[in-house]
Length: 167
Image 1: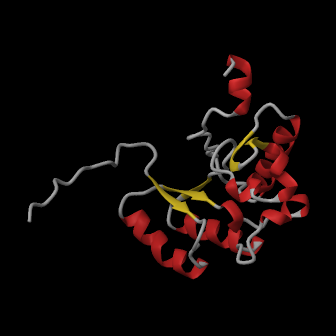
Image 2 (image 1 turned 90 degrees about the horizontal axis):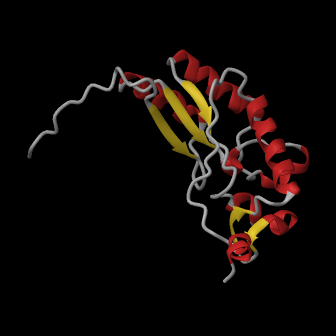
């Protein structure tokens, strides 16, 4: 078998590991084991896409999985990251990939296309209000994060686009 040449990425400013937590999120005890490995492999940050694993409060509590991390878990994850010289960068989807939000009847009216829960209608003032609340809650639990990733990829043209250009 042929070995791949070693590549040195140490001069790359951001070397991140992306943790997409939907489906089967790891326990904090597992992250305690893998964060040192990430650091040893040269990573300096972890991009965490919580989705329904974040401990949302108040009006957003409906988004929370029954298995969501607690506020204490979020604090512990950041502590573990710091011990391993990793910065946590929360990824909060703000346009597409928002099925975990738009699957709920409460937010159904914010869909770009009524039958598909994947994208927000960006023209609705309620969408912006919801995103502000979502981002505020996530960022308030990440006071040491100097970055946030807002997603905004893989959004398809929906009804609003076709209304503007004509079908």
